[in-house]
Length: 127
Image (cartoon, rainbow, N blue to C red; front, side, top):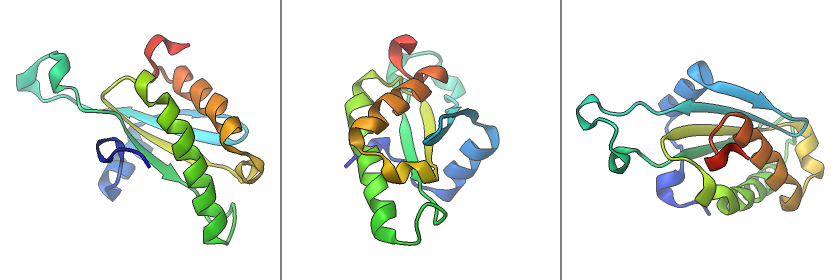
């Protein structure tokens, strides 16, 4: 499970990321990332930067069965937990699973996520 501070939950936040976010895509996953705005009165202090929040979207096109969709979400969360220490603060990110994600396991999601997050420059070092 992701820590609560790192979860993107509200519909309004999802809409903002979908409308204004930067995009990256691989064969298995899509990614939308939007840099959160900082309050003007707090300046560039690193203490005031909110943590990066993640949302996961797995549609019914992938599977009509909720069990399969939830399984994909759990695998994505497991991969995210490993990348969390390397993620820059201050982003809202939505991970979108495509139908090919049904055949993937957690070990396959990790390099895919790492590559997509680096492409959008959400990872520290952009490796």
